[in-house]
Image 1 (cartoon, helix red, strand yellow):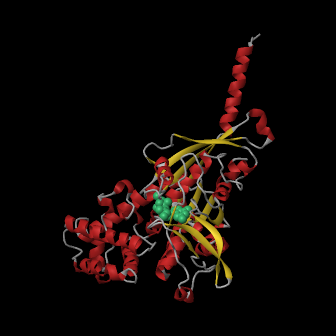
Image 2 (tube, protein in one colour; image 1 turned 120 degrees about the vertical axis):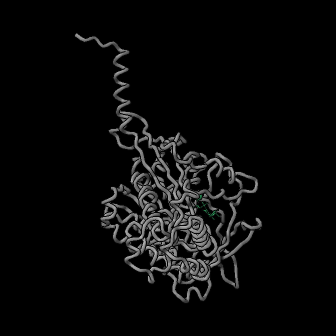
Image 3 (cartoon, protein in one colour; image 1 turned 90 degrees about the vertical axis):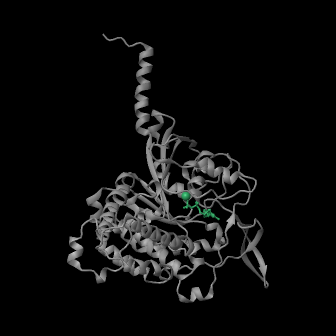
Length: 476
Ligand SMILES: Nc1nc2c(ncn2[C@@H]2O[C@H](COP(=O)(O)OP(=O)(O)O)[C@@H](O)[C@H]2O)c(=O)[nH]1
Ligand SMILES: [Mg+2]
């Protein structure tokens, strides 16, 4: 007869419970994206801040696990992939905690961090096995510009060049693109390649893209990597540009062009770029995402004017292609993505008075509507909402010409001056001509109001609803 002493039995029990615990532990990879300056860094900082400081005056009433008193604690643990940059949470919190708080410095490329969130499971079955469970949350921050490249996979160099040239020939891009187009049109595409000239023209094209994004506030930037190259900065794979004079080209000569003439090399690099940069991102990163939040700053384009807004709309349509994989044969040939929840958030909602939030969501809804419509038939659950990762304003009312009007009070970014404003009405529909003629929207950049200590919670709008949608079902 086997004799099992008490110690051994306890050990066995522990082992069984460990095993069970292990199966209770869950992983979620949450990807956070959005075009540059849409608010990714602010969002991730706030998300982590709210979770690790939960209990310290946090405002997470709509996050059920907190509301039901089952949230125990969250802490940072070493991230999953060691070759990917770490999300600089401490640096961001430092910016918010200074005497004169500022926004964190912008970051480029992809970064990661991991949280371990402990909570009490609700299900009675689990109660017998263990008191707590852990949700490991991997957060990945990557530029939304990278998603703008997906449609290129379906294009040849010729098709892409023609489409891009058409865009360059249209205002507001044409004004600044004119001299670049003229230079390219003067080149003999079949002459032996001059690498310096190719590098110079590529730089000129990249500078144009940077100008479109940061000076003109445009969103359709292709190739997206050119303005946020990550670790590929200066690599020859990012040195090509659209050939702007395909109409005049001898088709036969083009087909037979070798890689050492200009057009041949442009084409070769375009193909290489699609393989090694665009596809590689989807295969190495995108396939691993379980949940995705796409941040969109709709207010800055509203402030910038109709061209900027129209461009945002086009960019959102391009971004949506990455999530309509239910129907896309391109995707099913490449890999099988597994994102099952997709949240679109209009950021910086603290820039408008609260009664405008509803319109802001409706506007965002329309930007993503078409694809949302398609996605509803697929496996992805979608939601749109308006949020502020870090709330910088106080809402109130002010008496103006005998009427109470809603206003915001905040600290102007440029000079720290406290101001009270009515920033304007957000249209509930995609704005038409007369909206722009009335010029109703006035976007003011606000600085964070008061310093927030490293262990205090950042003020926010609807971060708890974000958590409930993205994580709630994993913490039952
Ligand atoms: N008022 C307000 N401004 C925000 C918020 N989030 C971002 N911003 C502004 O948008 C800028 C860009 O945000 P950031 O997170 O760096 O964008 P990223 O490029 O997507 O990482 C910040 O410097 C702030 O000026 C927010 O919740 N409220
Ligand atoms: Mg960032």
